[in-house]
Length: 146
Image (cartoon, rainbow, N blue to C red; front, side, top):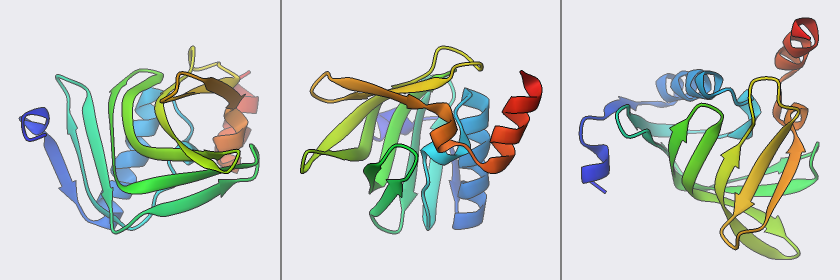
């Protein structure tokens, strides 16, 4: 894991990492609510490889009303990123039929995509409306830009 982090930009503290993670999601084209994390401890990014990580004080469970889905975020979440895509994701699970299933990929086609596709570790995936993960501000902006 140390090799993955060579040359990383590393930030510490809740406020700094919260702002950084929101900026990163915007840069990738994802809605801000796709990673509703809290109590950040550390975050980092290796620009040349696309490796990113976020550490929280502890695991966090979130219910997405718009998708009727429970998600569990581990103390540490990692991924490899590129525009509209997060791959090799670790630390995120969704509850499906009484079981927690790891999410390994999130992707969108482009900035106008109406859906986000989530792929699980068992190779099965599902798409949800992008608006399910957007703030009211993002929804308003999206309407105006159409």
